[in-house]
Image 1 (cartoon, one colour):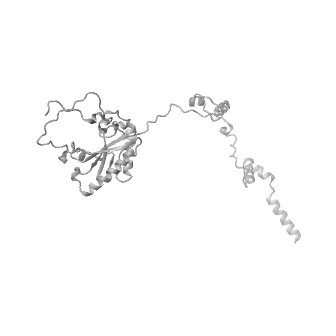
Image 2 (tube, helix red, strand yellow):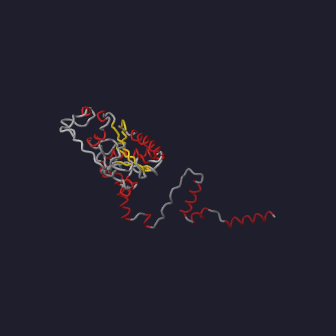
Amino acid sequence: MPETPPALPSFTAWPTFPFDGELNVKYLEEPVEVEPPRHGENPADCRACQAPDEAYVWVSDRWRVRSLDRPTGLPMVLILESRSHLDLGDLPNMLAAELGVMTVRLERAVRSLSGVARVHINRWGDGSAHLHVWFLARPYGRLQLRGTFLSLWDEILPPIEEAQWRENLALVAAWLEGFGGRALAEPPRIDWQAPAQFPAASDDGGAVEGGLDHAVAAKDPAEEGMAGEAAKDADHGSPAQSGTEEAAPAERPSNSDDAGLVQTEDSAHNLGPAAVSADAPDVASVEAGALRQEAGSG
């Protein structure tokens, strides 16, 4: 190893490089003879295999999509995983073909989000043995985030709002569900709070000053007088309550064809049997007269 570190590479002068100031290149360590096992080399210890579907954004029979556990600096960061415990080189032909379809489909879903210009797709595979492909959304107009260092900028930039992050997750999940599978991400709930009082409408259509409380307090004087008369009747007893007179029957429509019949029946009911028989002819007298006329003519 050289005594002094090598000169800085040219990419440190790129406008997309996220660091500035004095930098030093680390010394390169000696290679190891045997690399340590990656996480999940044993399927029994694999976190991806043990994770339930509820921990994912979208799931199907052979693929699952998950997000990080919190918002980060980019509009969206997603990870595509195979449901089976396989690495990239272990995929059978059918899953290998589906990986291409899923990659294009998920890229389109992420790129459909508002404010996303490009989607970077990366597969490193040095940390976990279970196949996982990264999808990172570059914000539109952020030219400094183009290229190789987007994953670094993701940890440098302040995280986006959680509500926006959850909405983006739900949109991507719904996009994927349109082709099959099941969306598990839900949009954020609306934090709606009811106002303390609603403005009441006045007679002319405007709002009453003072809101609902003022509108309730400002009663019509005529209504107050009617309420007072009703209270007096309740205290002293109205004719309907005293029982000396029968309450008048409810009025019926006067424009119907049987209005006259209704009026006659109601009048007979109110006048009683005596009043009806006073004006009616005697039936027995009529029959006797008819018999006399019959006998005379015979």
